[in-house]
Length: 200
Length: 200
Image 1: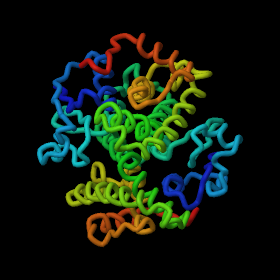
Image 2 (image 1 turned 180 degrees about the vertical axis):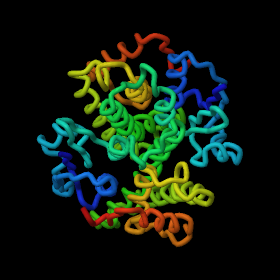
Image 3 (image 1 turned 135 degrees about the vertical axis):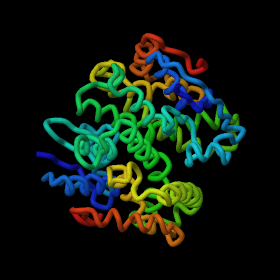
C-alpha cells in the first residue's frame, strides 16, 4: 500500500495526487497541516529530516521531494518517455521548476493566498514577481512551438510545471498575456483521469 | 564530441567537469563569463532560454540544469546505483540540493566571494545563512550513519552536494562543527580522478 504525507493546498503534493490518480494507484492520505507545523514535529522529521511535504511511503521506505517521487512512480509508464535524452530533458524541466519557478510562483501564492499576509511580504514579493514572470516567459516561449514540454507527449514534466502555474493567479500573477500557457492548461486538463488541485 | 558551456567559479559547472573527468570523457570547454553577462546574450539564450550555465552539448542537442546533466552522463555507470528506489533517492538528494541547499549556500558564496559585495546583501545574507545551516544540519545528520548519500556508494548525489558544500566557507559558513561533513569531504576527494573546483 502507498501512503502519501500530504498537505492539500500544496502544489507539490498535488503533483503526486494527480499522477497517482492517472496511474490508477490506490493510496492512503496522511494529512500534514504545515500551517500547524505538523511537518516539523519530531515524528515527521524522522520521516523527512528536511521537514517538507510530500513524502511517499511504499514498501517500508520513505521518499521525499515531489519531483523525485514523480520520477519514481512514472518510470516504465507512459508518463516518462523511453528515450534516454528525452528522460534527461524531463529532469531538466523538473529542475527548472524547483529552482527558477516554484520558489517564486509557489512562494508568492503561499504568502498571498494561504498565509493571507501579502502586506508582510511586500518587498520580497517584488523580487519574486520579477523572477516568476521570467520563468513564465521561458515556458511561454517553449510552448509556442511545443504542445507539451518534452517529446510532444504529456509527461511528469508537464505535471511538475502545471501544479503551480495553473494557480499562479493566487500569487497575484497575471496570466492574461500568456496564451500558449493557457492553451497548454487545457491540454493538461483534458488528460484522462485529470483531477483538480482541490481533490484527492 | 561533448562541449560544456562552463563558468569556472560555478559549483554547478564544476559538478559536470568533475564527473566528465571521472568518466574519462573528453570535452571542449566553452567559457561563459556570467559576470560579463555572457549567459544572457541572444546567442546563449538560443542554447538555454533560462540563461544559466552549465549547458552540455552532445550529438546535436543541448541539455541544461546541472543535476539533469549529471543524471544523463551517469546513467548506466558506477556513478548511479542500479536499483530503482536508490535511483529515486539520488534524485531526492539532488532536488534537495537545488531547492534547500544551493539557493542559500551557493548564493551566499556568489555575493561574498565572487561579486565581493557582502555589504550590499547584508540583510538577505541573514536569511540565506539560516536556511543554509538548516541544509547543512540535514546533511550532517545523514552522514552520521552513512558514508555517502545513497546506497553507501559514491554517486552523483555526492557530486551534486559536494560542489558547493566544500566551498561553503567562501559564503561565510563555518563548517568547524560539521565533523561528519568534513570526513565525507575526504572520502569524496579520495575518489579516483577527483579534480579540484579550480581545475578543468
